[in-house]
Length: 150
Image (cartoon, rainbow, N blue to C red; front, side, top):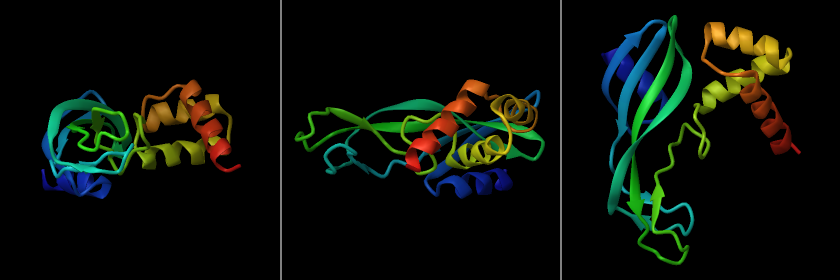
């Protein structure tokens, strides 16, 4: 249990372990963010008025021989600024790009492996050893990285 909590702290200090279970070769970690209030990403005004919670399914690097899926209970908040026109916003998780379904460290691992080979070979290696990703996802990661480096 303590080792699992350390694994989560490497991602974000604001994650708290709820439970974990093993299913075949996958480790499913249930965790939640600690409610601290957040800043609206649209207008920049802080809010501590919670709206709701939702669960995000995030893929991460393996833990030993197990592929990892994080089930993160994240918070939504009411925007208290009003200037941005948004009523609610979701908290941004530091270890993810906005709207991503994989951690930044898994994204970097995929990119490092895909650059040295083609997407089909990278897909086979990554599916066998790391996470369930398609060659289309790998191509999307490569393309997004190329656009960001321009």
